[in-house]
Image (spheres, rainbow, N blue to C red):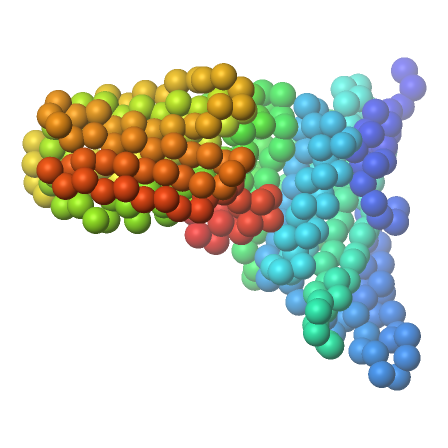
Length: 340
């Protein structure tokens, strides 16, 4: 049988930018790239602007297309302009019978000029192509290329099944946070086998930050005991393309209401929480139904960027209009990594 190399049947590795170098020379080659002399006496060398704050491991699964992988890589590079990091991109070959060259790599660097003089940020990436037969050696190999003493974040993307992703336990155990996006994955977070589930953060939840802030601000005007008293049903209706965001927003609302219930020491919250699908293009909405005259209705016009909330709780009637939006990819990533 002919040998299959890590670059064969590996379109993502071929598509991502970079200069191919021997794996053993990657760090030296990267260092030499940064140590390039300045273009003139007045310009400082790029090495002065290279200051990584973290390691970011991007791990592409077989369900990722070249277009998706390229867009994700560019999104992380854009993120690194504000939060400098060393990016490690892992691209498996689909050649299941690979017996040849197991791991190949290329290096990439970029400097971004800011608006003011001397404002520059530099980022770097090492992109690995590997065969599945090298999977058991992957974590040991990659550990050599991580910036020591810096936090490491792991973002697996578009794996064909949660079981195949769960097989990479070495990454789950040795990173500070795990990032997934259930808005595009074919599984939910509870399908993964994680040693520390609290380390996992979902970008679908991070994207709803301004919506959560809006809801929290509105409910802060009411006493907690009145918010939970007689609350029978909380329902979110959202189109299919926002199903992940709606589901996680409902989880957040349930957690907040349970916290209110615990704080006022009332009886256990007996509220039903439902997430329903509506027609594509329709505005998501949230309703709170009580067994008394209280009510809450919230319309989320994401296209127009406006939330409208009206409510009667404990006899008091309030309404509010607020600006909302789903966070952009770089913003959602920062929210998930640092604040989520």
